Length: 438
Ligand SMILES: *Cc1c(COP(=O)(O)O)cnc(C)c1O
Image (cartoon, rainbow, N blue to C red):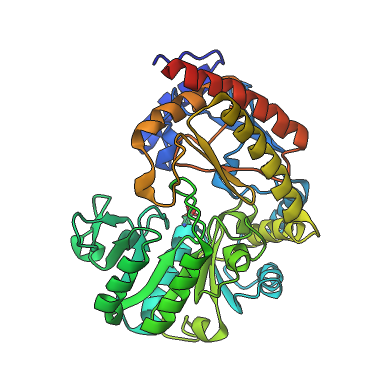
């Protein structure tokens, strides 16, 4: 398949060549390099609402939304005003600020699943700290994670399942000692028998089970509520803490995230992405008792020079306030459903071998009709089709995250008319995907 651009990407291409002189692979986060899709990555210079514009002045309807944080779209007026207001008084003090209290209060008062929260600066940092907390509380060292869930680039979680029956992790990155990887047991999602067996054998060594309750980093692997309830029950039974990694699902599938959506009480919850309104913020929270183990109250150390940075706190507060407006999530979900339904209907009429998964304002296109609830059920070959889809959408002014394993996000700034426009382009692109493969 030849990928020919009808859009001009020459400035992006030039900037990418320059960036390669400064950054490994020309980027500061690997997927941005467009390795799985065609052409150089777009260098974006500005965003407004549901659209952004690259250095060649191409404008795209954006469904990547900075990988999830921008639930209000680009350059939201209230976030911008609060950030400018705050930054005019300084960028960082290394002291507590009223702005931190303000965001903490807004979250705690509107979330029944945590009593206390600690702000950090990224999702990875939140997860890393939460794992330490779980180990500190239980005095145990091993962690269970699930294949197909991503938890940031925490050493002990950059692991995949070993071959055969052995579930001890094998690192997926150089630089991670096997002894670290061995502290993690990796299980397939939705396999209750294996979960049970693993807990029986290793429960006495296991500090926590970590899961993305809405797994959205390796396709959208929607789980049965009963599987999550089963985790909750088993954790109680074996004295293991349940850690919901809600860095994507938090404030996305509802203000109370997946915990609220499924009404399941985890022991620790991590947040990131939306919580900072587009600024670098992560957080983890739990009950008074759980959080009392964190320094300076308790023995589990965790700190950060720029934690609860005032500008970031102001952005987060301005964002989350808007999410609490009545009907916010209902409107966003209704729009997303309509968008997805249109694409599904078209694909069905044409007999295209694909499906569109959706929850709240998250969607994912898979080029298969089989039920997909585990990472292993995704066909790597189908990513060839995604590559064509991505390319054809770019030519038509629609931007998806540059990998078929990434989900799409609809924001409040995507008007129905924008979604209709995007759906029309999606249909054209799908025609090309399926006809060029025939
Ligand atoms: C994005 C993500 C992370 C990592 O967050 P960063 O801010 O990129 O460090 C961790 N867990 C989940 C579920 C995520 O989606």
